[in-house]
Image 1: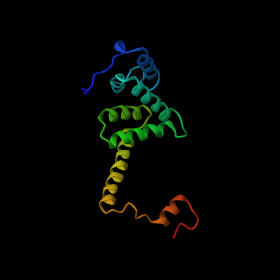
Image 2: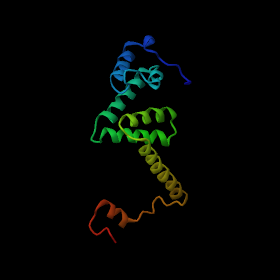
Image 3: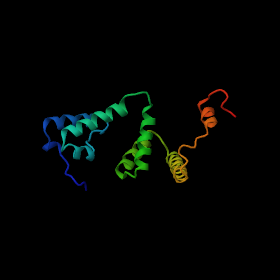
Image 4: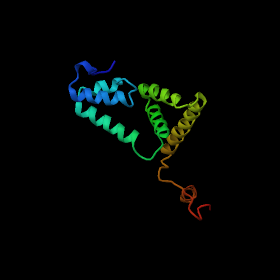
Length: 143
């Protein structure tokens, strides 16, 4: 149960109702996710969240499937149980298999773990420039 109440559509003002309709017509799949019902207690914040989501997820050059995978990875790393359930379901709907999702978890596990090691050794600035050049495809970066 959230620490603040849901603003149900029946109790919302016209501004919030319009935002709820936008959510339902788009990413809400006909419903208003509970997080947005809580944000409905502050129409300005709700509007900013909906607009930001539209800008991030509906515009730009990245493939929508990649954006969804990034959303899933983010909520997974942040241990956001709500987001994990929602974005895993979206990945499954996009056709990702259980094996692919587990493989992605392996990637997250490796890079989270190696990052702890790098941070613990204070190696954040210890970058091999020739490796970076090679990975960028710069000429002469192979030595």
